[in-house]
Image 1 (spheres, rainbow, N blue to C red):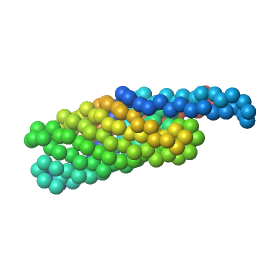
Image 2: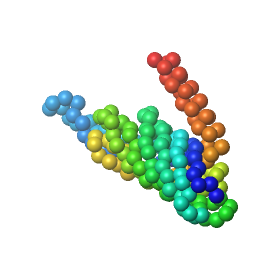
Image 3: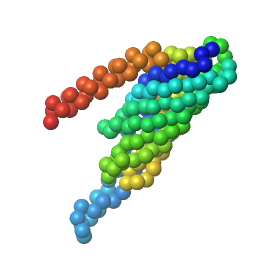
Image 4: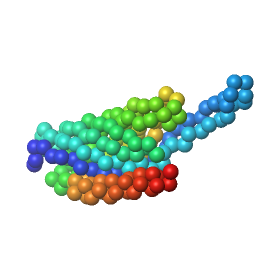
Length: 178
């Protein structure tokens, strides 16, 4: 058993259930209001790195930093993490709680969002994930439920490299089209 271990993970998740944000916005004083709906981000990708410490044969605590997308916007954040080892085969349950910073989807102001997730790890190779997070629109926190898959350690480094290359290609493609 290692006393400390590093987390290097990459994940892709899909929103399963999300609040729709609907409001009326006047186009000018005295004019009729236009109804605006902001759809939730459906797919999101994340790269996460951190450190955990085994405090017993079954329990580990730590934290991680992550960067990912929230639709067209970037999100960065931090999580406190707990891992419960289920046996000597490397199976474990992870629980994380934290916060991320994105832009408010309507005002474009910086927004603080909260999150919590749980994962069932298959050794250090990968995990199935589920969680809840909030997103902000006009200052209101709207909950989203998501699920997905996460690659751990060596596969996570490879996944992070692929996600980085894809993100770089998208940035250059968008920059070339403007």
